[in-house]
Length: 593
Image: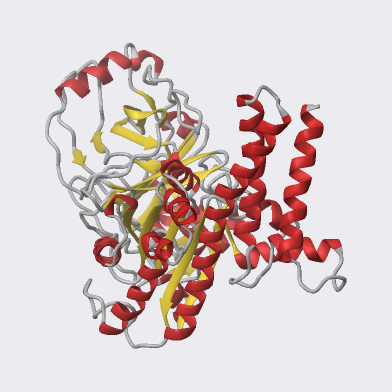
């Protein structure tokens, strides 16, 4: 009886929606009617209203069945109530999309629309139109994303290099604010009961304003400016009547591109403001946890002129800045840090009998073993293997130059472990894939990358950072270490959030050259710094990339961590300079006990 009643109510709800929204009777088939009802490409269609009614009817029926002890009348009442509430929320979304399309037309704005799916992912309208399950996606959507670009006026939304809206931008953001003003929408409803229902339906809504830039100039400055601009738009919406408790903002900087930065057209697409509307705070968290960057659009830093197929040198030209790379991470630059006593004790404790065993007790094999197996012993002995171009730029180095062993970078297939397929991006991603490296060298070779900075998601009401995720197992402030060619490398405070592999705090990097735990149990580090970090999330691991700015000769360090924890990293590399040549040495740290 329960399932029969449920089926009857659901069928009635679907029939009601289809009948109420179909075009001229008899002029379309059932499939076409459902498409027009739930997946109409017209932004002024009633997609969200219709799907909201069906979803609301299902939820209301289940609630009615539970409260009414499976009574058919209670189930029907619940279905009708759910249909009303779901329809109101959906109708509001439909009206906003339609009104936003009209604003775009009136002010010559370029707007793109996307649905936030039930799992927090995003599907553009263009992708939905090609999808075979578009109706299901829209039926269960939890929000919308609208990207806004100004193509009708010079300079975009803001005055040059500032967060001050242009007069023209004030006009169209006023119109946009009116679209999202729930109180204003309710005023247009004559029926007082429906007016109150509309206000209640929108009471839990959250709006996230995100400013985006291209990748030209300083990534840190881009993130800082984009945050100020996102906040300026958020404040403008508040002044136009949207409750500040519903508004959040973020400076995305260059971290979330939607187009290739190699062309001016692509860079123009990346300079945008996004308005993300979610039906509740819980769905805002779901969206942020599911969000992924389009890594394939990251542009490599042109660092090394090619001398031949077997030799490469470069100036790494690492960008510096004080802004965080990921939401919630503190600012940091390559600044020396003090205090090595406690850390040295941990290293000594983790490495008893290291001299006898030829390896530290932290379970990581020294590069000495690789040298005994036939790998070159030192840069000086393999200088002839690397040909330096006559006009090569000098590599950036500082302090004592440390030999980490390994081999010339130009002659080496990077031996880091695969991080697997990048979620929502490419069908396959491997850190050591030469085919992929040809496509996106920024991911396979850290010397061609740079720190990419974005700001935190903040609440407009108090500026507080919006927290959404727990730490990755093992990556919650632990120290990781390995001895490489006789030098102990320690990375303290490695902390990564599960959401998007977000950097939770800036680490410390210390290197103890020619480390001997027996002879010197309290050494002074030869390198002590706070490097900037990029993180990349794949199905098979998390790429944790440190930019070392030439300290000790190190250009950058890659570590691939397991997504599900573990005491030993999957793999990694150290890229360092010696005699103005780049070398790479394997690096696989473990947690220091």
